[in-house]
Image 1 (cartoon, helix red, strand yellow):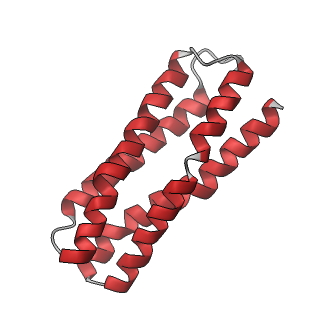
Image 2: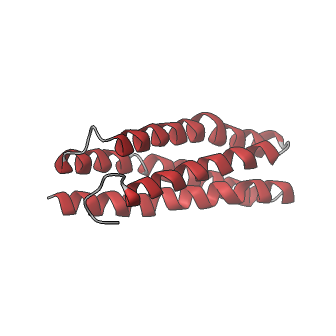
Length: 138
């Protein structure tokens, strides 16, 4: 069962979080070009896939529980970074995207926030692969 949960967790991360990071990263540059139609599409991709991405931590927690690692420091750190990334997306990035679509404005700060969002996900991925104290020999 653990392998099934882990497979779903990884697939959900690739299918849901991947498009959010790409679309969010493209948004500031497209905003600077002033392509309103593309901005709407990128914002929609971010909103829809961020909703689907809720499956990632759900299956991640189920996998961690199955593996008996819920109290491990690397996992707790990953959870904290995931919560931070989700908050950044929901409370800062998506609202700023909407404001840029509606009112125009400066996309530089949005670009910085998106970079931090992507960096958080990169650290989570590294933690998931390296897993300090793991018995995989990596």
